[in-house]
Amino acid sequence: MTDRHGLKLAQARGITLDDVGSTIVLENDHVRIWEVRVEPGQTLGWHIHFHPYVVIAITGGKNEIETIFGDKRTTYEPSGHAVLIDGMRPVHRLTNRDKTTYLARLIELKHVRWVPETAPLPSHELPETE
Image (cartoon, rainbow, N blue to C red):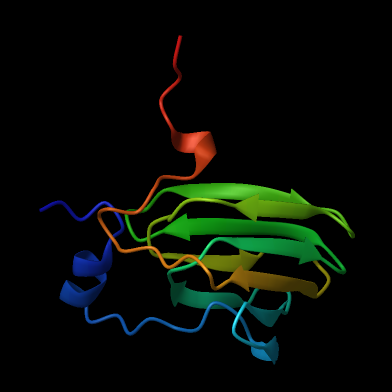
């Protein structure tokens, strides 16, 4: 079995995974809504998502997403920006690379629970079809 989501690697490194957000704002049978607050230069620790989710930037900003495999990607989310993540990504962490607090709402859609290694890849990572 492969480790495309990095859970075995995180375990081998002794990493305890953090929550996907800072504070739960609301939770019911259908959704879990997190506040994500990351101060300038701070990092939201290693975590993984088991549900599809939407992120809506409140204050927005420039962030860096780093996967457990060492891949890094800079993102910029202006205030009001929304993104849907529709496939399971590897264990990752988020660092605020801006001079202001990054504040967002992360809405997990609980009707779907991904199972690592068999979970779908995010649509932007799927191979192109002809």
